Image (cartoon, rainbow, N blue to C red; front, side, top):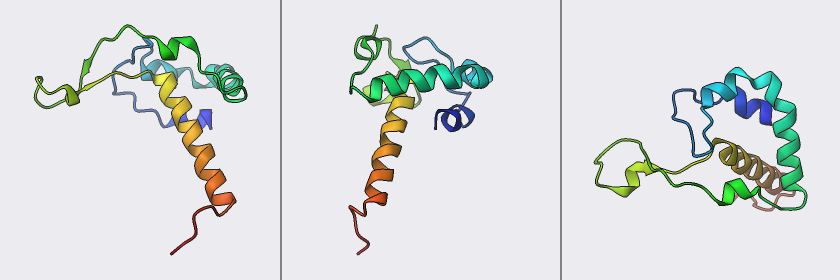
Length: 104
């Protein structure tokens, strides 16, 4: 899963609050797959999120639209977004596998 996320990463996006540019992650995909997988697994199993994902120096990054509108800024961490995708995929797989939601 981490490999898929890294390979499909949009390299035109700005770096997140973690200071990591998506392009760097994508270019180092083969080196990062194992350490990131271990990091996410160690976070997933006990249900603990790294402290750095909870605390951040908030620096809004402008996206588009009117600069006065706070909705046009983002505050993200690339590594945190990966963890969110992993959790979402696991939940969706569990829902589908256990037929929690039936077709109407």
